[in-house]
Each structure stands twice: as structure tokens, then as C-alpha cells.
Length: 635
Image (cartoon, rainbow, N blue to C red):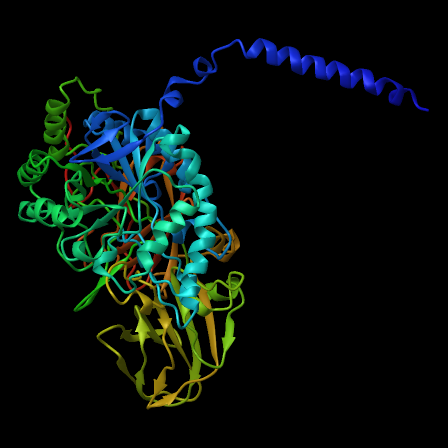
């Protein structure tokens, strides 16, 4: 018999004696004294008791502000949250964008700028509580209101309802998301004191079983903190759920009457809260730049507080719709949201102070009765030397280096393209090619904007208003190309089920459907540009063929700082710096510069690529501040 078997009983006896001894010693200790104080007394959490919020046994007034981690470079999260704390706010609110966290079905991304948990823990470190707004729909002026585009592969999809195809996807997403959220709740020692049930459902209201389903989905996965709903005036009467505290979204003092009249009639004497007090508004391409006067903001915020209500400033800091994530509105006309999400908020897009910040800090400081932390110093902004693009690659010359096109008898919309492991294309452009042999009238349903070419020559555009275009006389076989851009899926309203992009259905020439298409996915992710190695670029010619990619080098000789890219003389396109997609530009305004965070620059040479659709400008400029935006305000 091996020796180790002979000794085994002695080893077991020794371990048993050690366990008994440890128990006898440790039972003499006061276990409650070993638990950290921040965990020891957390039992009740945030409660809606009578007309007050209570945090444990103390009255609690929510002074909140919205910052979206996915719209702010991660390196600047702390700066923005410290500025929130210094303004006298005690609570951060943030949305969770499903479409960014699950870009392909069952494949989740919570890394880098999407590290929600790190953002929430950072808020706790700074000294802020958190109200989480996980959706699944969030609106937020983001593409499809934060719902992933692959949901639309189902032709029968009914978003924001208990349609099985939707709830199965929500259940899988919530299984993953809530496993991350649960440990961050107040009762588990985290900063999350409340969780919102969906968002503004009363203004949609397609399925009475939907909101109870979302509430149960949260509770079944371990959400134990106070639940809230959030609705604007139009949806407030239809957005309430049993057992969930209703809150309101508004901008004017006239709507404050709802806080007392309607809310009290629906839920009795309960705490009142404005979940979204709109400190400004978002902009759309071709529309005005929205500004809300500082004095009006102060009057309304003061009136809300005087009414005994808690408040959340939406937005405290808006940030940027980097990449292609912006949403759109479509009521009478389709209007795509601009890249900037500055929102005329309390902090500017680049995190600078505004008169609103100074006045609100005075107000919240006077209410708290305690001295506030000093506001952090502003991050410097610089003007860099203009860049003249040295190299270029026309879209047509780039096609051989792009992934193999999809071949199809008929056009296929973006979402249903058999690419990305069956998840289709979410963002960017899609190019459709076929061959024609005659002239006539071309007609198609294009979403959202289609530039039409014969071979490489532009002959016009198809969009929501222009659905037909004449094809001039041609000789022999001619390549018909349509470059279609997803300018942003609608993020609010009743027609979110109809947000498929690209060519929708057949395209007709003289009422005859065209066949045999090559379809190129131009999503312009980082991997897209990795195919354009150095030898593929040509010097910029005197008359470049457009659309095209233009390549230049930005030299930074010292520590990199924030700047703003100005494309004067260019018409419409997208800017990429060191692989980061800064977003769209368009000379129809109102936005005239793109925010470039200094943390995305390197000391030395930085790669700048401009994808231009229509007209090349002379240089790429780098400004100290937005050209027509708000001036920074320093206290």
C-alpha cells in the first residue's frame, strides 16, 4: 500500500482540528464590525415614501445629471464626472445602448469606451449615486433608439412589444446585461439607487403587456432597487406601470402642473421627479442650431425645486455621436441628427463650462448649504497647422480591396445582407451595382440617401422626396451604381419598425425591375481601412474622381490637446483620425466642425482620412473651438 494512503487520515484530522479552532476563535469576533461601513447599513435603499424620497432613514433629494459613457472618450470620464460633482449634483443618470453592446446577436462588447461597469464604479469613486436607464429602448437620439439593427432581419418584427421575436432577443440581452448590473446595485454595495423601466413608452403604447413584461424581466434577473418610468407630457397618461414610480420629462414651467395634477391623481402622494429637464435640444442636418437661454434654464430649474420635485438635467454633458450612431426624426420630413450631441447642455461637447454651469452651481450650492469642490481646470484646446491631403483613393479604385461583394438577383437591404456572421450591416454606406443597356426613368425606394452613377459619373440623388431620376442616353452596357447611406435610423416615433436601410424592394427602369446586383458593404470600421495599405494610395490628382478617400498627416510636436476639425470647401462625408471615426460632416449645417479629442492623437504623425462624396476642399483645418458653436466659458 502506498505511503500517502497511510498518512491520509492524519492529514484529514489535522485539517478538521484547524477548522474547529478557527471557528472557536472567529465566533468570538463581532462580524458586523468586519463589514465595511458602506455595506453594513445598506438595507432599504432608495424608497418613495409619501411625498419624499428616502435613502435608508434620511430624506433624499435627487439632483441628477445625464452623461452617456458611449458619447465621451473614456479618458475624459473622470473629468466630466468631477465637473458634475463640483456643480452640486449628487446623482449620475446614464442610458445603456443595446445596439452598441450587442452589435451581433449573442456577441457582447463591454470593453473600452463601452465599459459600463467601469463608468458606474468611477461615478461611485467620485461620490455620485447612479440611476441606470437600461432600456432596452432608450431613444437618446441614437440610431433606432438603441435597438440593434439585426432585429429588423425579421420581416414581421414588432419592436417594443411582446412579439416573441423581440422578447427572445431582449431576454438574452438582459441575461447578460443584468449579470453585470446586479453587483452594482446599492444593496450590494454599489452606487445604483434606481433603475428605469424602458423609456417613454407612453408615447408609443403599442402593447399593454409590454411594460409589465419589462418590469418582470428586470426583477427576475435580480434588480431590487427602486423602479421608475419616464414619460413626456404626451405619454404620461399611458406610460405608468403598477408598482413603479412615474416621473416626467419636460422643458417648460407650463408642464410643471402635471407633476401635481396628473401624478397625484395616478399614484397619490408620492415623490415627484423630473427625470429629464431638457437643458437644450439636439440639432438636425439642415435645421437650426438650438439654444436655450441660461436665465430660462435657471427659472425652470428653480421652479421644479420649489415645487418639491427632484430633478435630472438632460443633458448635463451631451458629448458626441462618434461614428455613425446618430439617430433621426421622421414626422413630416426625415431629418438626420448631426454628429455633435452638444445639446446646448451645461457642459459643452468638449467638456467646457458654460454660463449655465456657473449659475446652476450657485443654485445647487446654496441649496446644499455646504462648500462644493472646486471645478477642475479646463482641458486645453489648440489650433494645429492645416493638413493638405497628399494621397487619395477613389471609391471605384478601392472596390477590389474591399471584401467580396454579395451577389444577388434582387437588391437586398442593409440589415439582411448575408455578412457579419448573418447579422447584416448596421451602419455606413452600401453600394449597389448592376448593368443597364437603355435610358429611361429610374425609380426606387432608397433609405436614406442614394447617389446615382453611370459608370463613375454622378447623375443625381434618390431620397425620401426624390424617388425617380432620368437616365440619359447611353450606348451599350453601362454600370449603374447607387451609393446608399444610412443617415440614421429613426429613434423616436411610431414607425421604428420600418427603419431598414439601403435599397428597399426592387429598383425599376421604365417600370421593369432590374436584376443581378453586386452589393458592397462599406461599413468603414477600423478593419475596413486596414485593407488600404500604403502602395494602394495615389498622389492627389488635379481633378480627383469622387467619391474618394483622401489621406493626410497631422503633425503634433508637443503633448496632444483637443481640437476641432473644419472642412471648409468640402461638401459631405466622414472624417477618420488614427482609425477613430469622428462622424459625419455636411456643409448644409448647422454643425461646421467635428470634435477631435486630444487623447485620440499621438505626439508625432497622425493619420487623417476624409471620405468625401461630392467636392474636395483645399485643406483640412484644426481649430481651437467650434466655428459657429458656443464659446468656452471659464469661471
